[in-house]
Image (cartoon, rainbow, N blue to C red; front, side, top):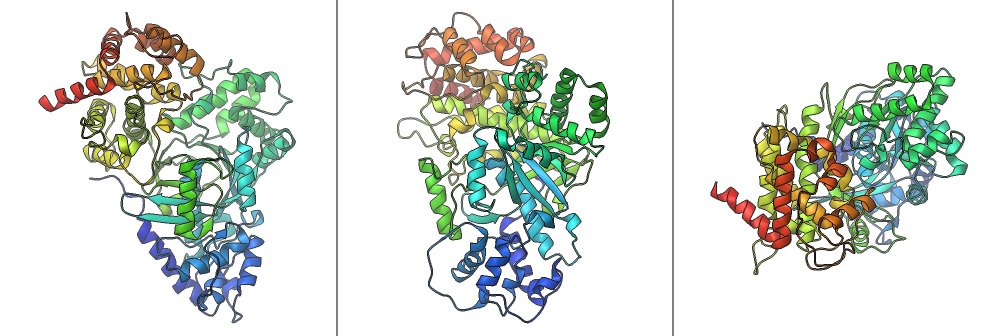
Length: 619
């Protein structure tokens, strides 16, 4: 058995294009059938006007429209907005852009959707994943031979609650909430203009009522989240941290603008409760073990502190929190207002691939997977028609993803950065350090997977050995240029959720924790703030001040300037702060970390990792 296939992008592009030609030209099988019937050809102006109003402009593809007229000379690319969509479609046809999906020809005005998903935390991953699935569902519905009603169409409204969300909102607003996704693997590139985002609200004092009213609107059936691990405001014991500054503000200042995701969700649910409405489904799409259970825990912990017993019971008995497993490697890009070489390269690729000027595009691998617990209180889109997998128990898929892919990312991030690598694909190239020395990172990554694998339960339809080899290939994808610094961010949140339990279980079962020890040791060394060549490291972590201080104390480097000194005892204070008392009191683990940290300081990360993987070869 192999990993369940979610979709073949190239085949899907061909199928959608064929359906556009055959079914739309025949004037059948379209949920807005009347709009494409009749003999009057649709001109560019008519199509542009329809798209600008958020209406369906499928008639533009019928055989006698201007879409099929001879090529005309025009610009090399078009700014991304609704009025330009017909020109972009024509440009892509004239220039034989066969690797580009048809643009969003479906109706996008809010009034055409009976059901809406409000998504908190619109970033690169949401735009490459859930929004992409929803866009493809809307495209499929355009040419479905069954009559599709407005009730079955779902759109997404972005919700911003953090100050930095305003930049995303501004760019999306300028582009009529559309953006481009470039999908790349080692030998192909695809382009998609995504239109499933139909609005964006927030974040500022003036718009909080709009945010809350949007969440409380009966049209909103699902509130989804990608707020990263730190956005859930948990402590190391898996409880809501009531001393977190955001949570504390919201609890103590109920009449002020919410600063946390949980405060915003609870406030919106309270509006629905007071108005005698049904609740919405709260769906986490973050990389957390049991993300649905943790989201429910977050909300209920907040409600207990909030102190309204009847409201708390209403949420407990009526609201649902499905677990999900999400997977698509998506490097971060920045808006055109920021100088950023990688993002500028992505924008140039969008112009070349799609003929579009996009101020904040997304680039991702072509591989994509989504496993969802089918537990929704007010309905859901039929994402399974686009390759999502609905199951009763997400646990095995989630454990596989978190303990191999996500843990694997952290496993290579700190060690590779210390060895002066900056990009994931280069770190995963065994020959990247030649002619001076061999790069041990790929072999270490495989060894780490083998250490973690006993803690992954059987996954239906998946060969774990093959999955591990697939991850090595995905990590080594040279065409998305994912940065090690992105993988290294928020280590205090990621290491806790992806590695702690596996390490504790391995030690209890008498299995090796050598790879885990190297990961933690290089993380401590990384937190000193300078790599082994003396280059300063920019550290991003919600607990950076605390952990940097502990790491520097451990290695007798108070100012973060080389040299560092080997520890004189196991770093118990650091481990207790980072992983909790159970791991910090485990002598097997702490001794292994002490010995490993001593060796990498006295020699180097490369020397110790080479020694570790050579022991594997000898076995």
